[in-house]
Length: 102
Image (cartoon, rainbow, N blue to C red; front, top):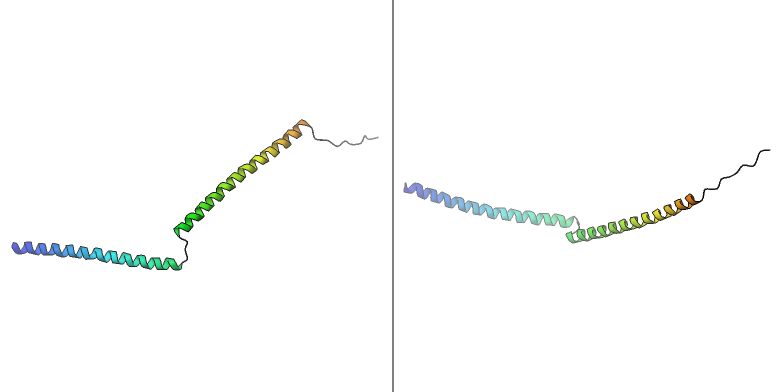
């Protein structure tokens, strides 16, 4: 009975040590994979997060400016269209008269 207990204790210690070693191996593999990916990405000449954020801000500002200009253009076209319509409504368009037949 005592030998079974010590055997189980030894197995528990062995399993604990193995899991600890596996955790260390996992961390080592993650570090190596991360380093390799960073090397690959640095060679690809990709933009940084800060550069992407700056471009997003510029695009948003340009989009807002385009929307404002579109609204101004629509307003100006609306004024031009309404003044042209009101002028034509107040005065009929001239018609060309045919000479009287003899």
